Structures are given as structure tokens and as C-alpha cells.
Image 1: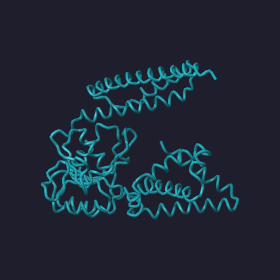
Image 2: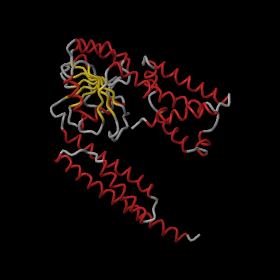
Image 3: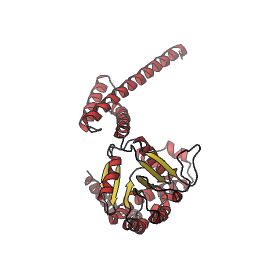
Image 4: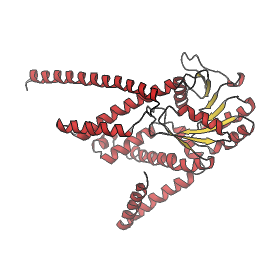
Length: 365
């Protein structure tokens, strides 16, 4: 092997890589300038027609340079997502919605609590944190919220579901002057304290951010809003998310847990069951990864994310939702029927349920 030639080619690659990074950095600088123009003209952050134009041009350039167009599009999908994230952060900061406003986050050192702390701070809120104990060098920590005047514009309850019910009950006596915001994934255990808190005269809004704390871009993500008798308070909370690309969905309290039993409960338990079968199979994880298929890799990626989440929260999502038995029993029934089809060599029934699933998915826009 000609090692000198190999070294020369590798150095050439290094030079190309450096040039690519410089071009991406230059592109990101232009993205910031475009973001400024969008802010000045009150234009939306995302323009799908423009994105299509970019992808069409990129694929044409790729073909002209003998590069797989699909690979080129995948690369630019990441580049555009990064650009959108940058513009969204820029828009959130420029909103300055939190100027001269304050927020107390109870459970603020948890993952979602920290997400809200960062999100509100970026809008210039004066954010205070209460939790079991402060983080290292945390200067905005409130040791006991029951010993201070709760005159914050927002009091956000970001604790485990059962604990949130207890805190909401305490707030009835404390009577905070601002909006009390609950972000729990399951609402049934909070029905009574939320109603009582609203009936006591407090401004109460219940929301459910349908994303985790690692989110970078809110385009395509959803935030559910549940009115607890104060429409103006709901509109104020929606204002927090106005600079983002998140879709804001209004929902009735009584509908939330039924739908979440499918969206969260069912999807969680399917992936937990998948990982349980693998972990108890006796087959080595590295061996299976070498033999993996496209479907297996995709399922493993999702299941790995689920298994890395807080198991106590995921248990609460199953246990505290009154609708969980419905979805869990339906899942068990579906698995048993599939097993029976295979044992009975009933290919027709098996094809029918797959076609039924295919038809169901065509309804999704």
C-alpha cells in the first residue's frame, strides 16, 4: 500500500471537511440575518414552500455532481432543522414576554422543570426554583415556598403527578396571585385540587407539553391547553409559546386522559414490552445489533429512548390513568389474537388485520 498517497488523500479530506464547516458556519450567519428580517416583518419562522425549493435545488446539484440526491437531502434536513432551531430561539428571546415578570417553578430542578426554567429565562422572566435541594451554586433557589409571598406572575407545578395533587391542594390556602400552571401528563388525579383551586378564586391553567426536556426544535410538537374556568389565563399561557412553532391545542379536561392512554400509555408499554423480551431473551445485544434490520433498528431506537426515561413517571402514567386498563387489555387481546392466528395457520385473518392497520394509517393526514 502506498502510505504516502493515503496520507496525502487523507490530508485532502481534512481540507475539504474544514471548508465544509466554514461554509455551514457562513450559512448559519445568513440564517441569523434572515431571522432578523423575519422578526422585523413579523414573518413565520417556518416556510415549507421555501424548504421544498431548497431540497429541490440540493437534489439537482447532487445529481449534477454524481451524488445520491437522497443523501444530500438527509444532510440538508439536519442543516435546515438546526437553522430553524436557531431562528426559533432567536424569536423566543426577542419576544421579551417575561420582562418585569417573575415565575416560581415548584420541582424546578427536575428535567421538565429545568426545561421551563430555561424557556422562561430566555424570555427574560425572573425565574425562581423550589425543589428538595438546590443545585450547586444555585442563586435563585427558594427553600420553602410556603414561607414567601406568592406574588409571581406564574407558579408552575412540575413535580411527579401524585405530588402535584398535594401541592395544588396546599396552594388553595396560600392563594398565589398569578397563574398556577400544572404540566402533568395525567390529569385525573388532579381533577379535584384543580377545581378547588379555581373555585377558591385562583387563576388556574392545566397544560400538557407533548415533548420531553431534550427537545431542540418545537416545530411539529404540540402543547395541550385545558381551560379551568378562566379563558384569559389560558390566553396568557398560550402567549408563552407564541414565539415558538409549537402547535397549541385546546382540549376538554374529560377528554385528555382517554386520548393520552393511547398516545403515551399504549406507545410506552409496547416499547417497554419490546425491551423486556429482548433483555430476558438471553441473546446478546451486540449480536442482535449485527443482525439488525431496518425495522428492528427503528424500533430499538424508540424503545431505547423509552427505557432511558424516568421509570417512576412512566409507572404513574400507566397506574394513574383511569383509561389504562382499556388500552392494556386491548393490547393483550390483540397479541393473543395474533398468536392464535399463527397457531391456527390463519393467514387470511393475519392479512386482514395488517390491511386494517394500513387503512387506519391512511386516515392520518
